[in-house]
Amino acid sequence: MTKFSRRRAATLLAGAIVAPFAAPAIVSARSSQTIFIIVPYASGGSIDSLIRSIAKGMSEALDQPVLVDNKPGANGIVGSQYVARAPKDGTVLLAGGTGPISLNVLLRKALPYKLADFASVAMLCNGPLSLTVNAKMPATDMKGFVAYAKSRDKPLFYATLGPGSVTHLFGLMMGKSMGFAVTDVAYRNNPASIMELLSGECDLNFATPAAVVEHVKSGQLRLLAVSSDKRMPNLPDVPTFAESGYPELSASFWTALHAPAGTPRETIERLNTAANAAMQKPEIAKQLETDGLQADTGAPQLLDSQLIKDAALWGPVITAQHIALE
Image 1 (cartoon, rainbow, N blue to C red):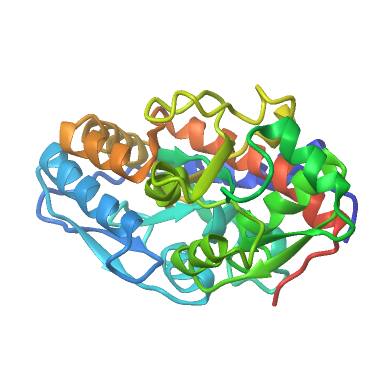
Image 2: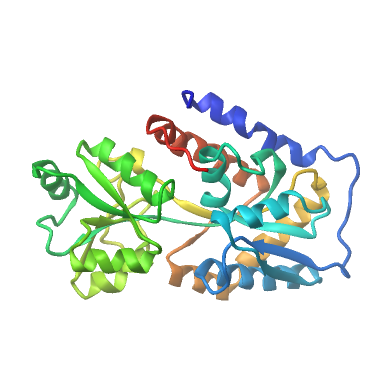
């Protein structure tokens, strides 16, 4: 792979930022039309549940039906490709995220879509990773953790959700930043990886804080840091990586709404306003808190900026490690 610079990151994403507003005509959605939000995962997960709540709120704001349609498969590729080829009228949206959009584009040469195929509609939320270890590890803070890792004669084994996942890439970044060897171990899902951490088969995990907090409270696991910019309100005693001396490890995974490129500006703005209104509802705020997520709303350009940040953050480690997926 070629060297990945910030300038290249901006160039790669320029099409995704400019293309959405290139359509010559304005198409306004009609109240009789149903809007479908495509979730590229199977039903039943936390993101699926959140998007269904957001769809309900958007339906109320728009005064037209907004429904969720699950199209899982191939690490989000099936659903994302469907939206990339959908009508450019605002009736089909993608509940995109770090994996289906940013990482797939960076990792897969034969991807059947590109960033320029999507128009940014609205950021919805983001969430941090955690550095969680078994409570039996002789480290109670980041300084002790780094000292322990460097004293070992073998790498630390860390759990991932598979090659090219956020957890995989973050572990590589952490090992390089802190100066010790790590080895990734892939698991089919978060619960499986947490069980291995509890049993001591794995040394550390980057699961979301919400996924491990009960085990932390019970004394089985120890949460040493979170990757958010600020401390989490429900975990005020857990420092951030930046506070611990590693600002380069500030990172998050996110969820957002995308439309097919070429969707008119007026339609994008209407959908953005409805999404932002939905995110203000108390029931959604409660759902975010339960899932350990943070609302991250604003104009479509906020999502444009996030895509550029992702390319600059994950691109170099992908290039340095020569990671490529089919």
